[in-house]
Length: 551
Image (cartoon, rainbow, N blue to C red):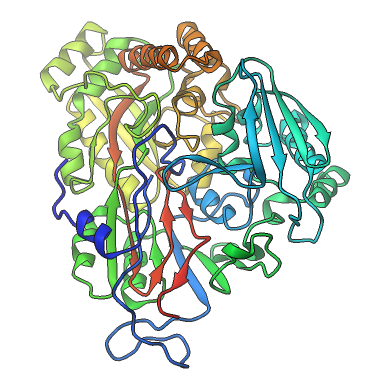
């Protein structure tokens, strides 16, 4: 869609922000969620001298020791194995590191591993690990620790939210002190992508042991990784604070600020005002309606770029009212996505023509459901639903999500579907979906952090991913889709794998278990005196190189 202001190209030239290119990856890259990159500013910031942080007469906020980030919600967990939201991932990435990671170009690069290699049929992945890496508690990272982490997350008795993410692993073999072999249950050409996801962050063996000795020990609130920042505190409803790790293993990439404070600011207008005044340095998930006004701020940079975030309306297919495909098609035709993008997200997006976004590896566009109220009403009549029905639509209680919910509810009423919009704190809504606690309709936003189609599709559409604790909250069951996804995962031939993903998307889009809405652009803003922040296409934020300019 055409944006109100084409600021992106100017910002790419004058700032350090670099948006991640659309290459073979899913979930935005980045976040869920979460594909973009960040920026800084080539214009020199005012010399801060020896003064404390504060606002000078011109309005420029002078550098200090702490970066403050305003997030749209509070993290659900500081344990990478036990969270699925992009906000949690953004905080965790400052403290935890995995064997691999995605760089800003979505290439897979070694992290706590020095190298990795597949065998010929993609059933084994061998890692040579870095030596001299210590956790924040001073304990050593080695092959035994890596194996213990994988064994821990795979143990179903531990009840971790990301356990199924690793279920391609059949066994982890310790070859020697700094070498491990991942054995897959079946050929798996996407293993490295999965292990580059932030959820594969390694934690201290002592922390794992504490949990094993005491089931009540809370890993969600005790973060001990190997990253450039280490955990300080989490005050509910206020902030999470991390501080510089003075003993970080990678001396060439030490943290450049003393601390980062992640604040939870649910109201979008509050986040924006805090940015204007310099109370915060960075705001992610900036409401698009605020972008124009911030573009005129002298000491604020606004930027946008493609993301992997697909917005949709999920529906519980166990409900009789959604059983007929004609009803699901009618709902898709009843929503004017172009108008939604123009009015609700101010042109920062495009119509979703697949269950996954264009930057995702394996994306295959389908023929979109055009806005057609008359056709939608005819489809409702064919399904015997000409009198419509009542529905409940759950949404997160943020400005962006509630605006989308109200827009969709208004349009569905045109075909006789009376929608009651109910807004919840995001963590509460996730729990309700995980527990199938009265699920009817809900607004979802999905972006696969692995950057590829398997994790873009499998969590939401595979038959074995239904609740409790899995993401297929609509209970979509299709054995043909299951087989296509499994065949693609096991096929080392790229062309054949892409064709299988194309067929899966074609079936899913036609059967319409979602109302496919839009792929939103990533829009964020930061103070001009700050640089080195990167937003991934999955929506998560990489803060590890953040710094004050000219400090």
